[in-house]
Image (cartoon, rainbow, N blue to C red; front, top):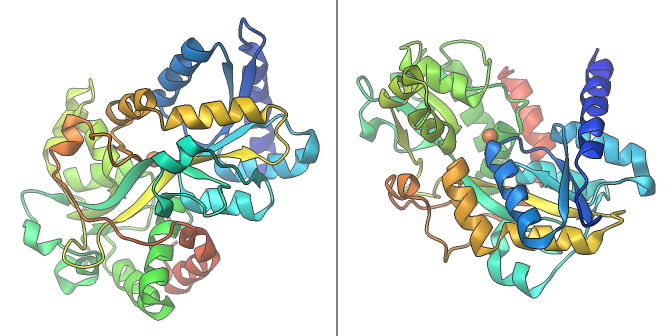
Length: 341
Ligand code: FE
């Protein structure tokens, strides 16, 4: 079942890869686990600026990893893009990413938000936040992720499946900061407060809060902003009913993850891959990405888009992001043990 689905997804996207080679004959293949409209605009701008065509093979991170493993040194992957440091770490760990560096990359990407040896580099940041129903929850009730374990929220919490990488990374960061026992107690406490079994996407959790099925949810910040500027009035209505709380501002800071990229170990066009990677942290791309996808720029010297700036400055958790990979399997085990499916 899984295999046939994967086969379908990849053969369909292999056709997409072949379909769009550029005029100069120069190209770069991107194996991408990010599927946002913003990326298409970004790659088009890169093509415009460099004449290097960007050919994208979209799949989820697990599929990309399996595919690169199977392709070995025959792979056509040049740049690999994923929307979570935990996934990038797993690709690195499988030997699929090459250490890379350049003055541009070093100058642009803060140390904490990249692999120490340069196997992957962050190019945007996202915060995992508490989304709450404005009419029934007071801001002071949701100042910390620990609040989600309190009796106050019994039967009122929704979250997506624990197998999702965003949640694996969230718990991995807690393991890194506070240890496995604390992480287990937290996961068990949140699970005990669930309004329903985990289901759906981050957006579905936000919708559940807006619909009154729950009072609080865990989601990435940009999903709220995306609903808020939707062309669909019903989606804007959903956004108007909820608010974002950046957790743990008096403590460790909000959990922040990245979208990032690394050059494939067996890339046939590493120069082009490096140009695209550097482009992702250029002024142009950083200023394009933020407003298009409501993510925070990776570069501290680039201002966030106005709707992000309107959320206010917030304190970020300060851990090296390779911790999200190092603790990933332990996090999965904890979720399973406490029954957070
Ligand atoms: Fe996402």
